[in-house]
Length: 196
Image (cartoon, rainbow, N blue to C red):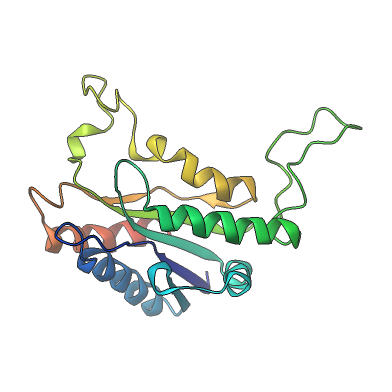
């Protein structure tokens, strides 16, 4: 991988989320990628962006990493707006995908196979209050055995729909009640080395 796009989806909330952890994690990702000789572009959604420039960044990138806090079991609303604008532009330009993959002439073609972004990879790096124990355990009430990757299939599906390979996600868990920033940074470095 040569070109890496890091998207920081943090959204400030007074007294709850200042963005320091997501900024730190995005910084670690940038540092690790540059150590590997990669060119890195960054987008901080909260600071504003140009839609066409974001389409071009996606086309340029070999690896796209979303750094995001989890608010109410999803990304901040500014990220959804970003996706709607950037992916719709990519569709209209037919640069992200041609269509949904199906044709009337060949009903065997599957929905979600019209992407043009093959050869690219996408990874989630998340920060949230949910403890690690809440995932992958059928005895847990909320997620009932689902993994973080299962919970965020609606996010990764955007990229998979366009032909991008989805990498295993990374999470900083329990960031409000039992933060371990030093441990999270060390785990993120190991995760990046393993999956990239």
